[in-house]
Length: 354
Image 1 (cartoon, one colour):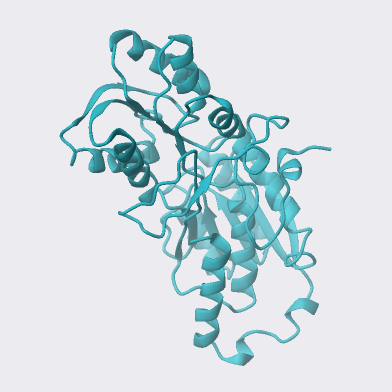
Image 2: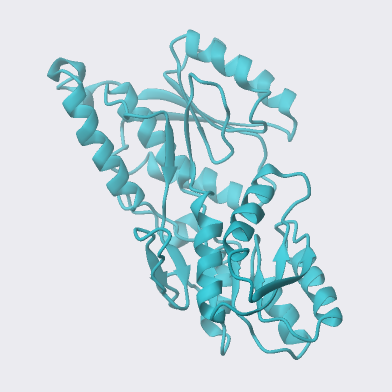
């Protein structure tokens, strides 16, 4: 289900649960809500695009004129984010949207914000504080759909390599676990090697290259990071291009679109999650609360070969095409898709083009 449709459905549900008086008739005429975005680092392309997406979204309808956005970026420590949040709370904003540096350590500070009447939404890297709303991509379905896709591409038989992601990262273990849960049902598929891609091109390419040298037959590669690094390792080794998974960075979508024989499925975690969180904050402040505090975004998988999922029949597949979701003339770190369907964020805007 697309994020816009999901929120539209939530709005309908909320309207039936609330009295007419709960939503001000002159909501559009009210002064803007003061909303802080708390971010704990900007050390990669995704985070930079995430901040741009928030800034762009509040300048266009339907959020234009509704949000006075203030952004707080702190050094990459949990304590720095806690200190920043405490300062934000003292300013008494209407809402705070947070890309959290910790799922647990921020909870006491978040509870303090909630008690002060501040709406708190944790997005992307979420928190467990019960009073906070959370919004993240559906990391439960993503690796299972990718595993199912690889199984179908291989006809249920083959030797594969598996990326463990980043050592110690909970999301890495979740992705690997979901993938292996599916493939273990197929005795004809054998995992012949593991590597840690660290969500970076260099380690991904090096990890795959090392395993290719040790294994003369590799039929598919499960990658948690780019995927483009795995393709480059196959090319450098003079090996056939095999089906891969990965993330829809522009480098990867263009590589998949322009490499002969490439077969890819890419699971998105859109950088516009920040814009979705801001939109949700405005809806809540307007009185339109969602039915649940935990919100999962389910965006279309980008793929060279759309194959319907039997595990998740509603999982959408979007074909990778140059000019649509692959842009050879744009930054390789641009993360796709760039825009939700309720506001237009262009690829050039998302990339920070002047």
